[in-house]
Length: 252
Image 1 (cartoon, rainbow, N blue to C red):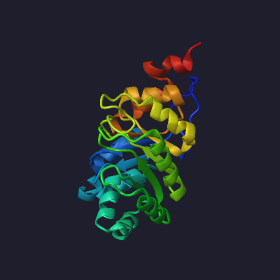
Image 2: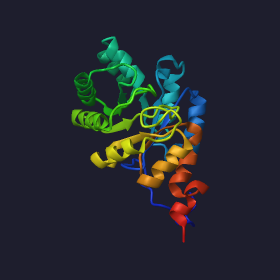
Image 3: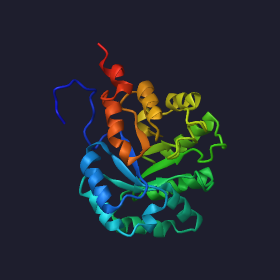
Image 4: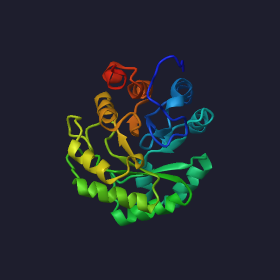
């Protein structure tokens, strides 16, 4: 990157803040390599969405494309939920090790895993992997009270999760968001009041959601469910290189 402009300070990878989680919804190995060549410097983790990893023919080549370019991979929490449902958590963990994947997501947005059993699952997987726990409902009509969000986030962190992902779906219309995509600001305020911000990753697939988080919580906010085609866009928002945030960071 050129260095003649004054821009907000950004940590280099591996970052502890300003983390960007990108969701890969089915890129080929060649597309993954091309994406990582272009934007890998700004991507902290790639999540292979849902159960796509289970049906990807060139999975090994795809993982190598990311790994060789310094982009860690984790699998979507849907696979973890299904493995738990079928009593195949040990087999799931063995498969992750076989693939050389060191990070895993534990969610309960589709399968209603009781909170004590979810905590036990996080603790079990945290013995071998870096665990990202997800909290929140995928159903836009299912609303968790803010105090329950806070309690579940704390439970996940105490069980061994490194960070907690706050649900927003890839469509940006559930969990922290109303069906029209607008953030539930009271909920988000309550979460950041009770939980250290560095421990949180907010799913924000839509540009106006990303802008809102950056305006309220700063360019070092951790954001997830970012589509590959939006990774560079998000970085420009963090740095004030796009009209939406230019005045926020560069007003004289």
